[in-house]
Image 1 (cartoon, rainbow over the protein chains, first blue to last red):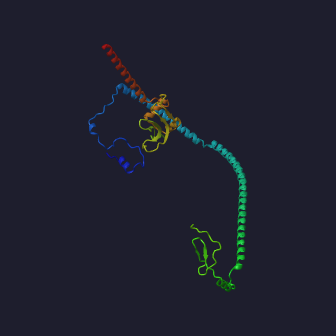
Image 2: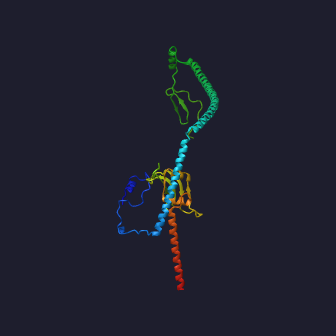
Image 3: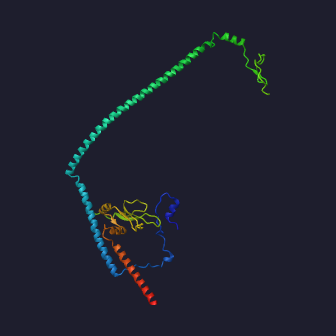
Length: 212
Length: 122
């Protein structure tokens, strides 16, 4: 038995949770076992029927009266609400309005003074903050300049040893006259012998053998 | 102008298995179960609590308002309101009462008969 509801549930599982009808669908026929079943009619005696009729009629009459009463009540309330917009109430409302405006103005003035004070304080704080920042930046800049000037001074001192076009020839001569050999050899004891071709002076202090 | 039966004050079953609980609500007549109600006016717990009370909560002011708007009242809610004294007693309450009394009377008669039989046998 596949009702449309079940089909929907299969297609859209748990997307929409609805309280499905927990009975068999309308279009299904009467079950075979129930075809010839004739439901038993309730037995109501004549007395009971008349009594029921009487109390039902009474109840309906009373209910009608109650409902009419509340309906009239509603109409009355509505009309009273509408009459609230009459001249008298309009004058009262206008007075109330002016009073409200006065109070509102007072509050506005109070709030305005408070706001002014607050703004002043805020501006002072902002100025202070900006000045502090500027000072800080000044100090930083000064430090930077000092550092740079120190560097320049050092470079200037060093520049006396630089090779210039005038001193180039003499520098070359000097370099040729004093060749430097960076090659060296090491023996097992860790002694360093500088120079490759020329036998340089042997190391001054002999090291102890590393092997023994 | 009289508002025709647009709204209905009914009880809506909200409990779970073996635990009935009802909301007394104002709804549109053709509301589906998945749709919201207009307003909830109270609740009814049909299971007696430890003090053997069945609790009903009602917002009578709103009930009056909705009655003024032309709302209709379903039978079970009418019974409840009748018992609470807001409405006249519902005919179904009377009917249930006299039927219960009749069943009780019959049971008593049966028991008496049985007792007489046992006496005559002894």
